[in-house]
Each structure stands twice: as C-alpha cells, then as structure tokens.
Amino acid sequence: HTMKATESKIKEICNRFAEYSCLLSIPGFGPDVSSKVLGAIGDPFRFESGKQVLKMSGFDLSAERSGQNSDGATPVISKKGKADLRYALYQAALIASAKNRDFKVYYMNKLRSREREKGIKTKMRVKLAAKLLIIAWALMKKKERFDPSYLNKE
Image 1: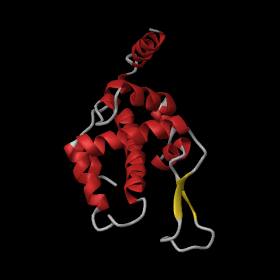
Image 2: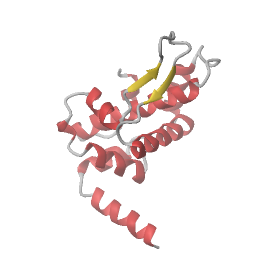
Image 3: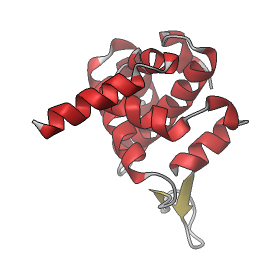
C-alpha cells in the first residue's frame, strides 16, 4: 500500500511539470523512468550541451584500455553520476528496442555487421540509453512530444 501511495505522490508532483508529459511520450519511458529523468535534469537549461547531460548521468563512456587497441578494450560506463538513472534508461532502451518499431529498426541498424562482436548488444543498448537521455533533455527544453525522426539526428 505504501508503494502505491508513493508512486501516486510521485506522479502527482511530476504532473506539475509540463516536461513530464513530453518524457512520457518517449517509447520505453513510463512514469518511473520519466520521474527519474525529470529529477536528474531538473531545469534543462542549466546544461549547455548534451555532453554535460551525459556527464551528469555518468553515460560519458570511458573504455578501460591500458594500452590495448579498441578491439580488446572493454567499454565501461563510468562509475560517476547517477547509477539509478543509468539503470532506468538502460531498461527503457531495452523495452524500446524490443517493442517499438522505430527503435527496433534503429537498434538493428546499429548492430548490422557487428553481430559477432562480444557484448555488442549490451554496448549498443547502453548507447541507445544515452541517446534516450539526450532526446529527453531536448524534449524538455522544447516542451515537445517525441517524434521518431529524432532517432536519426546525431
């Protein structure tokens, strides 16, 4: 019962922000992911670039290379930033790339000819999660709903 009450309170607070419905329009974004993104970004205008948004979340990818070429390097998400936000966005990417046609196509195109690489599916989902965060930030700034054409913008 307390869980339901908490969720309902979170929804009630989030609904006060125009940006919340923009976030809910993104495939894979439910009330939980949307509230976490809203809370993490806050005022979208406090960030000057997508790079800053990714850094805040810890999605700025840092590969542990120690002198190896990129084939042998293991990409790791930095431990800085908000782990619960990254987890929520990864789940959103998982759902979007499995259930939404536009995201499925986008994801499959990213995987094309790389299917045999070790861990490539996870790596591409992490990249998709980071892209979702940038899309969310842009939608919050413009107070717009999601449009599938945003997927093809780099």
